[in-house]
Every structure is written in C-alpha cells, then in structure tokens.
Image 1 (cartoon, rainbow, N blue to C red):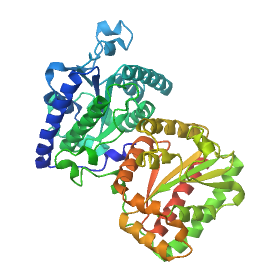
Image 2 (image 1 turned 90 degrees about the horizontal axis):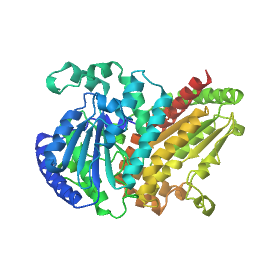
Image 3 (image 1 turned 45 degrees about the vertical axis):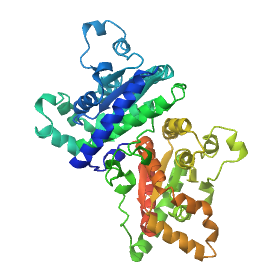
Image 4 (image 1 turned 135 degrees about the vertical axis):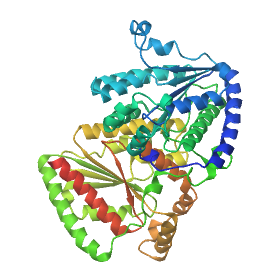
Length: 503
C-alpha cells in the first residue's frame, strides 16, 4: 500500500515557487466558491510521525483565507471531553456550511495509536473503523467534503529526521516521533489496515510521499484543488459526489504551472521496476525445470493439506501473461487447476455485481484457480475507458480488499502479479505478432488504441497498488522486458508462497 509513497519524488526550489503561486491562487478562488455554497470542507492530516504534518498544517493556514478556517489539534483529552462520548470532541469541531476545519489528528488517531502500542486489539480497531465509516458517510451525505491526507515516510528517512535537528526543528518535533520510530513496523501495519477499511468512495484516502518537503506540499495542494473543484462543480448532488481519486496526486487535467509536467512529479510505482533485469538462456534452462518440479510437488502437498490457491495475472498487452501462465500450469497436474481467461462480461455477468463472476470460480479445497486478468479490470480498463463511473470504481478498492481478505481469512494462498514492460518493448512485440501467422490473432485494433492511453493506465496501476497491495495481499511487480527472467521470478514467488503456507 505504501510502495507508491517511497519512489523518491522531488520538486526543485524553482518549480516549487512557480507551482505554489498558482496553487495559492486557485485555493483562494475555490474557498470563495465554498463560502457561497452549502458545502463544508474537512481536511484530515494524518500519517507517519516525522512526515511534517505540523508544517503541512502551517502551509494550509497560509494558503487559505483564515476568516473561515479553524484548526483543531486533537491531542490529550480534556476533562470535559473524557466525561462525554468519544465523538463529542469531533462533532463540536465540525465546520459550518461554507467554512473549513483542519483536523491535525482526528477520529483515526486513537484507534491506530492504541493498537500500535498494544493498548487494544484488532477487533477494537475494526469496530472503531466501522463507526468512523458511518460518521463520514453521514457527513458526506449532508454535504461535507472530506479530504483525508496520509503522509508517508520510509523507515530510514524517519530515522534520519529523528537524529537530525536540522530536518525537524526542536519546537516542531512531535514527542511521539521517538516512540513510533521504535515500533515503525507495528504502526505501519495498523495504519495499513485502518486505511484499507476506511478507504471509501465518499471519503477516500490520499497517500502522499513526504520524503521531499516541497513535493509533499505541492502534492497536497494539488489534491486539495482537485477535491474542491470536483465537489463544488456538482454541489447539487453531495451524496453521490466523489471527492477525488484515491492516491491521485498529479494528473494531466490538473497541471499546476510547469512543475506537474516534470518527470519526478509524474513518477509512478512502475518506475521503481528495474526493466534491465534479464536471465541468460543457460541459467533459464537450468532454473525453469527445477522450479517447475518444485511447484508440482508443492501443488500435490497443498492438495493433501486441502489448501486452495488463487493466482492473478495482470499486466500490459503483450507483457507475456499467457506464456508465464503456461510455464506455471505445465508444472502441475491438470486435475488440480483451472485457468479462467477474463474478457468483456456477458449479459448474465452484467446482470450481477461485478465480483459475482469471480466468486463463481473460487477453487475448492486443495485446488487452484488462475485468473488471466481479473476483478482488477474494474479499476483498470473500466476506469480508463469510462465503462464504470468514478463513484463505482472508487468504491471498488474497498470492495476488492474485502473480497481478498475473505479469501485469505479462509486460508487461500493469493498471488497477484503485474507484469511490467516499457512502451518500446511492447511495440516490438506487437510488430512480431503481426508478422507471425500463429500469433496474429493476439493483436487487435484495441491493443493499438490502448497504447495511446499508456499514461492513464500507469496512473491507474499506481492507484491500484496504493490501495490494494496490503501485507496480507501484496502485489508483485514483475520486470517483464525479458520474458525468461519474468517466468523464473514468477515461479520462484509462487513456490515461496506455497512453501510458506504448507509449513
């Protein structure tokens, strides 16, 4: 989930100055529009300790007209608050119509902190998140625009900030920073679950990379502009309004001066995949049969243990999904698996919830289902091609996470692969397909059209990873420019997951 916020994005001083001026101006214009509307704005500032949340709050207060803004820092509970139900302290701080509330900390803080520090259990967190979702839906239906910002830092950067007074001024440094740096993994695990359970269409989370302070602030400002613009353009339908895309930081439609055109700002999680990785033919010929033999043995072992497996293969057109699946299936007894190729839904499937056709093929105990494309089409092709409305695919992140969580809770081994190639390699493969009579059926006009939407799909994949790659259901991003390397790495990953599960 946090891979998309560890990409090393940066913004130069000159780019920042240019973009900040434009952002400041647009935010003030939108605030004036908010002031004359029936809507209110709630900005929730949360994230890893040391990410500069206090600096973000300061920046927001400089960008916004202070006449209609109240900042609330939820820290120690007062006697007045302790004597009342927990949510009283939040209800009394909600903004009036036309105004803004910045929540430095929020209703998420206590549930996350308590579980991370061992003061509650997971059931307590889940119960509290359900209550939060109900609250946010209530507020959204009433017209509140809820912008939830999560600022992320990698462990090493957090450690550096803890050690360096130059990075975080002493009077700004959170007293929780040192405590949380010692329990970074626990805090991140709890936060991931809280974000996943509360990432809804009416109040999505926006995960922001906070390693570079200038990038952090420009990304935050861009998100705020997007959310306000969309919500205020459709003020008549607050109940169905979707604030902005989860994890959506920078978009061609939202260019803020020149900075959002820069390579660093357009970086996605796919840019972290090293496409130069390759495997020489001799090593491939040695490793492939050994891994296939191991996979075959593990498949029978899991059959005896009555453990089922689900594999998901996604990737670019021409990335080699089919050939990778064939190397997997050729290693196993045909009685143990089914391959389900996913195409456009039938009339029967369209008459049901989009997950229905995938639930139908979940394997029984001891068997496996391999999906050649999957339910992720909802947030990929259906999103990019506008076959699903924004509200529909926005809520699909949570629906997909809940679906996969049920699989894992049942004991299913879930492997999710995105096979990544670059545009040049895709073009080369497309041309080879056109020239090979045995493969001409694989190339269609739609494949060529999809190339024109490459960047839209990159953004969709970035959001997909940000919202559905969890500790229990992680994505494996596979370098696919060299097919031999990809096939061997996929087999290795599957064998490792199966071997771990069979212990």
